[in-house]
Length: 454
Ligand SMILES: Nc1ncnc2c1ncn2[C@@H]1O[C@H](COP(=O)(O)OP(=O)(O)OP(=O)(O)O)[C@@H](O)[C@H]1O
Ligand SMILES: [Mg+2]
Image (cartoon, rainbow, N blue to C red; front, side, top):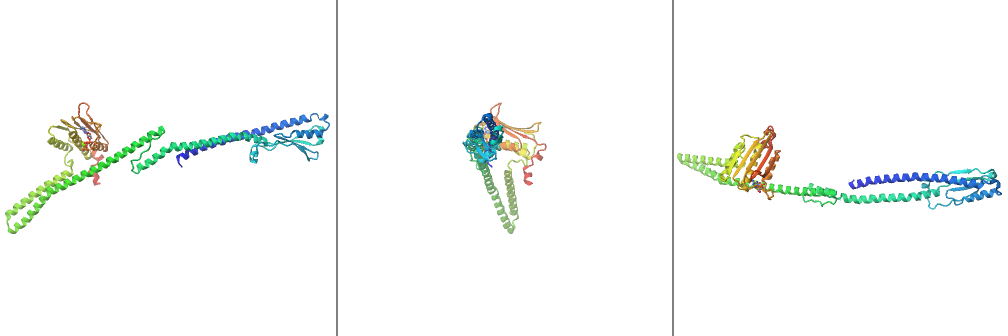
């Protein structure tokens, strides 16, 4: 059941209960009123009869007096007077005033009790003339009571119906934003990040719609960035493959060809039994094979660019700095790095962070000094800093780069943080990574090779 119908149903039940309670109170009051009015009417009727017959001794025509007495009750709203002959046959009876509104027998039975019938004690002068009875009739009273109660009950019922109607439409409008939101979430779930919702009018929901739209924009941006990263990765891999093919072609193929030629020459020289030249060719083959080994080794080195598989982190950083020193001799490079390993994953992350930070410093500014500092705090945190004294970092500058993102992701993957900010003490940029150290680094972070081998 929809939330709208659920709310309307609950409120309808409350209104119905109120209506029923109101009707019960009205009913109890009506029953009491009808019964009280009948008692009063009967008392008044008795008094009228008493007054009419209290001068019995002076009455010349007592029978006539009784007939007139019965006639006096004609048109009464609640009482009927009936005169029986001494032989109990019906002599006279009065007629009631007809009710202004007709009431159904059901309603009459509900509100009025059984009629009250009283035989009036007549003075001795009237005794042999017949019996006088008074009988109550509540039709007029019930009609009046019902007439009085029907209007307020109708107003109450109309009010309840109106409240329900207004509630139904108001809830429909109020809950519309939630319906829109559900629909938009379904679109996001299906990967359609263009889904947006209109700004919701109720103040409480405005933040919901703006929050949803911001989330959708962020997701769309992330998807776009992922796509670009993926494309970049593919381009890099493609370039690497092309470079590898070129190297194999340029460096190894000619050597293989020369080995092939030398082998064929040896065959001819063997037939001519020219041992001296055979030895010369064999030397040439060995030298070509040595060149090939060197080239293949260089290619393997390219395939494992960090060089961390063979070197310690400190030596790999040293190599990196040498690389830059040879290309940018005007910059002074220095490093303070303990000669130890924190496990393959941490070492490799540190190396990548330092390499990208150096790239950025050299690429984006003209520093005169770049420092690399690695230290282990007493609290089991590894702090890595790369500081330059270049022109500094403009956080507002739009960038399509992935270096900073990549560094931050690497730090986050190890449960750490990475901050890139301008130095406070002087111009330049400070890259600071803080990585928590596990008690046993290699146990907590298994090497990539180990994961691949599993
Ligand atoms: N050491 C630095 N000094 C000054 N600006 C820097 C420094 N490091 C980063 N920046 C600024 O931060 C931006 C983002 O750097 P990031 O490494 O993410 O991208 P990139 O170097 O431009 O491209 P990519 O790394 O993808 O080749 C740079 O464009 C640059 O403006
Ligand atoms: Mg960069």
